[in-house]
Length: 291
Image 1 (cartoon, rainbow, N blue to C red):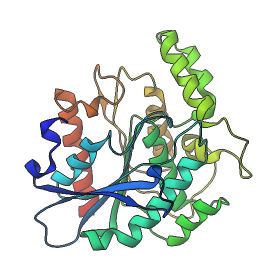
Image 2 (spheres, helix red, strand yellow):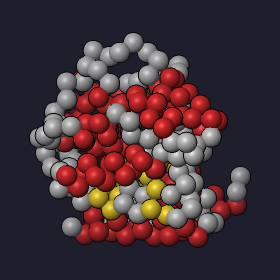
Image 3 (cartoon, rainbow, N blue to C red):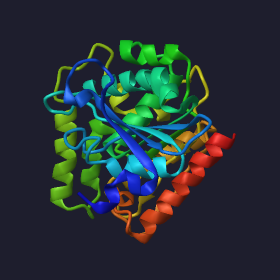
Image 4 (tube, helix red, strand yellow):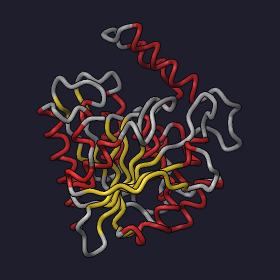
């Protein structure tokens, strides 16, 4: 309802509610944001919304689709199945399917699938990182294997303020500065997302940070990462661990800490640090596309 949400004011058009799995389910819809004026094929951003794996959708995260499209990208803003009705690995299966759909369909919307970047915040950052790992590590899960077999690694990954180690929420109890309410919300996320029976191939893909910290070697090089976070974010430590894990692997990771900012602050685009974060994100995209 916000007047700035009108894409036409920004030279952007939106094609809504495309079914990327052919299921007829609202969870399997995506929107395409693209500049009205375009010539050559544009970079592609696959955006995955946050919400603790339990709430929100592509429709709540319109600002991300609009922001990247204003800067000259074709954006595929996806929804996916939510916990606890659909626990892990449903969300991972869905974003893997969306990735395949984008590879097959980006060109008809004016995008260049060879210049694809994955982005998302919070739970969407978890799924962003997991999907990136699926393109580079040979995994036994059928949905991850299909992604790997496509042979297309994104040119960049952008996990904003990610919750990247879902199964060990108890680590937050050691942070005495966190309120009991925040810790309870963290527990709720873990319990909802992992409430199903353990999958045949385990829960590695629920914890992409643990995979990166392990001795497992990718079959293909990982792309560069951009991982911004606020210093008042209760899950700040996951981004710190991500930066260290990628550094040990020799993977470029631009990690910027925005002083005093809470979780997902970049969504509040009127804030000075949010605007700074978006400028940093655009710079990362430009560098990835130029390389």
